[in-house]
Every structure is written in C-alpha cells, then in structure tokens.
Image 1 (cartoon, rainbow, N blue to C red):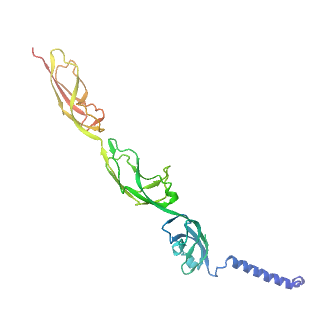
Image 2 (cartoon, rainbow, N blue to C red; image 1 turned 30 degrees about the horizontal axis):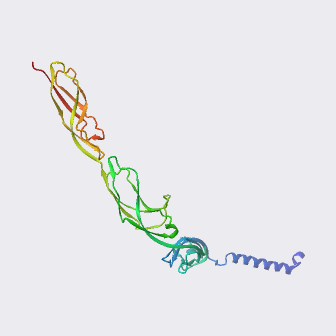
Image 3 (cartoon, one colour; image 1 turned 135 degrees about the horizontal axis):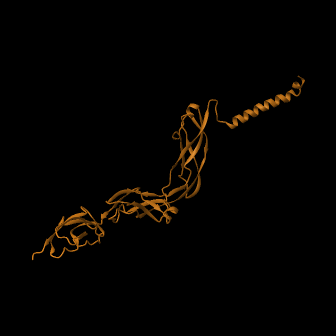
Length: 311
C-alpha cells in the first residue's frame, strides 16, 4: 500500500489533467452537439439572386453540402427543400470572383458547416443575336417520292449566351428524318446551335421549338396503254390470221420519275402460232415496262383467229 501513497499529490494532479483533457477533446470535436442531438449531411441546390441582365454565369457550383444538427426526430425527416442556399450577385462584376453562400434553415435545425462556404463564380458579358435556321436531312423518302423546300415558323431564332460561346456558333440546325416518308411532314423540332465541327453548344434558343412544314410530292404518275400481243410465226400455207382479240385491251402502269416517257404500247410474252390451223387462245403475261410497274393486272387473254383461205 505504500506505493499508492507515494507521490499521491502528483497522481491526483495527473488524474485531474486526464479528465480535463478527455473533456476538452470530447467537446472540441463536437462542440455543437447537445446531449440528445444528432447530425447529418445533406446536399442543397444553390439559388443565385440579383443576377445582372448584362452578365451571364459560365462557372459556378450548383449545390452545397450542409452539416446540420437537431433532435433525432427532426434529423430523420430532414429534406433538401427544407433549406434555401443563396448567392447574391448584385455587386459582382465581369470576371472571376468569390461570393458567400447564405443558408436559411428551418426551426429546430442548426447548420454546423457549409461546404463550400464561398462560391467560385465566373461572369461573362451576355450577348444576343438572331440567326437563320439551317436544315440537315437524314435518310431518303419512299421510292418514287421527293421532298421539297422546308418552311420554318419562325424562319429565324434568337440566341443568348456568353460572348465567348456565341463566337463559336457556326449555325443553328434542325435535323429532319425523312426515311420512308410518302406524305407531307408537319413537326415541332428543337433547334440546336452547333460549332464548325457539328458539336452541340449549350446555348438558350428562343423559341425553344420551331414549326417545320416539309412538302413531300409523288414522282409517280399513271398511264393507260394499249396491250399489243407479240405473235411469232405463221400458219401453214393456205391458212391465215383473220383477227386478234385481247381482253382487256388496255393496262394501267405506274411510272416513277417525272421525266419518264411512256411507250406507245405494252407488249406480251411471245405467242407461237407456227403451223397452227385453228384459233389459238392463250393467257399470256404482259412484259413489265422499263421505269414503271403494272397496277391492276399482269396477264391478258389473247384469241388469235386462224382460217383457211378461200380459193
């Protein structure tokens, strides 16, 4: 027991210092935590206020991380919309600058930390201009159809953005997909600003959508042509062909291409009458005309009358 009493005062002092040190560490590491409190971290979007009309922001954080404390019951129900994080731009000039992030918190919650507490922002001159719409056609219409000149409403769009970004714009483009179309197109399409390499540039366009009317016309026309049988050969001596009947005598053809000129008549496959001494009746195919196609029928009935010659 003697060793316990030895240097007793020093040992008591060490114990007191240990308790003090523990308490200091305990409360400096969590200075804002009460006995029955919890804490959490939450992402909150930043709202920029008092923006100048002649400047546009090209660089800024879009949210902050808030560390908050409160009762466990309140912490369990906390949501981002319960807070409002704002950055005031009223006195900010063109160029890079830092601005305080101000947070409004609801009753029952205390904000311990804002990360970042200052927003690094970049402001540039705001420029506006009007540009015509260019069209980019994708695909081909249905065979036998062609597209006309598109009509836009409005014919020009207004764009606004940072001066440095607007200098990169080559054109404002609308893409039209005409693959397989066979009738007029009427669409609302969002125009896209692009640079010289065709890359999209994130710039506001007004109006957001443009009405597009694209006429699509048919290059196909019809022609009703007589059918001429292709007769090959002759009857034997003393016989002759007295009459040829075709049923039906005409056929309708679709002609693709405006410049296509129809032939004077359609022809059948060959009908052989070598050494025939009586009437020949055949169902024969009509030959498909070049640059067109048969509409209603592909065969005809042909009746070739052959009679013995009178002496």
